[in-house]
Image (cartoon, rainbow, N blue to C red; front, side, top):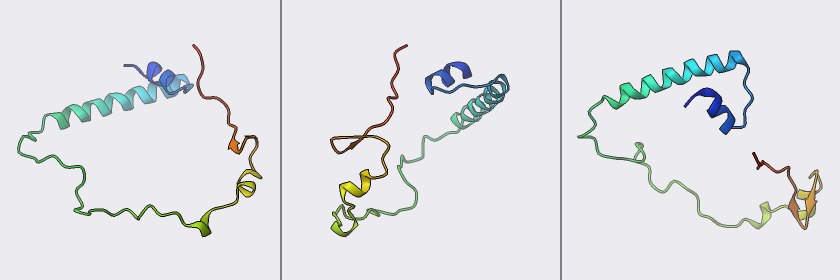
Length: 94
């Protein structure tokens, strides 16, 4: 994949200098990944975390004293409709 294609997928406009810079960085990243792939990990147990912490999330409880009234929340919104924020569309037809 080249930088222009990735930029298009990310909806980014890049200058020629940025394309050159990101192309070099992308190449360096792929080289690093190739080096990492050379490591023998056959004896390494799969893991999703390394800190041995378990269940460090807080309980999912509603705290009524922290809920703002809808009128307060919507007061600074640029656009609203039926109690929802109105934002510009992010999907475009090509």
